[in-house]
Length: 128
Length: 309
Length: 174
Image 1 (cartoon, chains in turn red, purple, orange):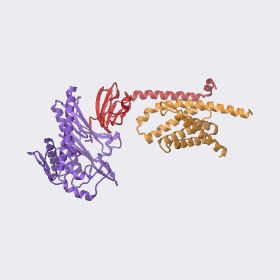
Image 2: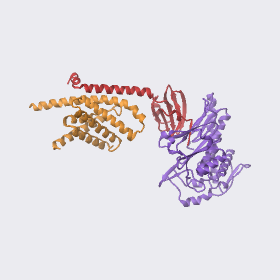
Image 3: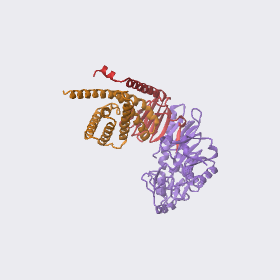
Image 4: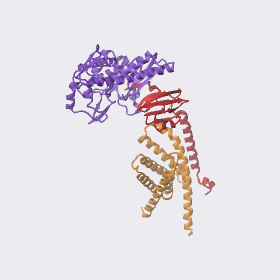
């Protein structure tokens, strides 16, 4: 069956549905990218406890100390990455720059999440 | 110590700040070596080994630490007691082990802060009965936070936070001129989202929290947690968490433990007598607060399950 | 049900399983991006024999596939089952309520759409309670589903056409 014949075997309902869904999904993708631009805050957890909640838009470099040693984290241009890590496989560094989502270093128990952690609970330290 | 220590220093000079922070960490490490219950080389272990035998000469930090511990014991009528070692050892919260009644009964007489003798002049400490053990875990972290903050200030840092696990000492204001914002953990957080139930702004104050959710296990419907009542040898009921705010971490740490054991009513009375601020969530989910901080604590939506009387 | 029908369903289910197995052997860069070739069989069953046989073929295929994979009653089983049944019902409904409105291509797109919607729902309620994560991936899933649905629909059309031609030939006493 030739392509032309195939296309003509599709009904107008088919074509409308197809285009509609394409449109919907594309606009959804663009919407998501604009409204949720990966998040505004970076949360760094060490050993399962939140160590820092930092804004994504302020460039900075910091070290956190896990059971294996120091992990160097860099926030720049609204992205975050792990620059140095004492772990064996360096998977966390391989992830490169992350604009949204998570970077995990399992051996050194460091979890970095880019999200929209409620700004008003951005605390400087936690007791409890 | 298996604890996370976070030091934040505000400074315009990066190098001197880093140096100050390194020194502060060293101070904390030094204190840890002196006071570690689990390390045979620590001064505390030396005192413990010589219980009922002889007094032990120790460094000024340990003298200061234990003197303050005794002070807290007196003010809480023994609800806080560093000599709780023999009974504490009977529990293993990791492996879900709790002692039998007779084991507790056998060891309870060894728990009594009045048998801890400090001689300031000779800088010695003596435990009067054989088998007594000091575990200063309930006060060292706060003390270490204070000392680290002192080191920072001595080296010219004007504001910062030292957090030794959940024992926090703040001084000065943040670069934007606002006080430091401290989150208080929700004792019954179901997941990461409800982790913090309230925030409070502090400057030049310390805050510590004792909670029944830090080290515990549940057996036969009962919760066995690490905040033991030195007078009975059992996990103290009455409260879910206690947070104390005062000028020094050594006191917030130890009083948080002591007041937790005393329970909400007696605990609040002691707080008021001391002039400290604090917040207690009791076992019925009722919130008690000292009058001065009522306006300063901001409860989050996650604290919905707790109510005021 | 005639033995002949049971035989048919078994055969179709086997084809579906075979396709599923074959497809899962293919290497892909993106783990969960699959054409869902087994759904092809479901669609063809629906078109040739009706809704009930189609549902049975889907059910059998999902159960057997998860038994063979060792994930029976596990999360992927739940998702496959939910997605498969919902999409089959949706396609059946579209076919019989609006006769001839959609060609196999359109039906397949509808199938894929409902398959994904059902899986997103199930994933949210049963596994990942974070609505932001779900909402974040929905548009992408929608897009991929639409495209794979269309491709599947095309293949189904071709197959049906071929089958019809072959049936014709047989009838004509080739």
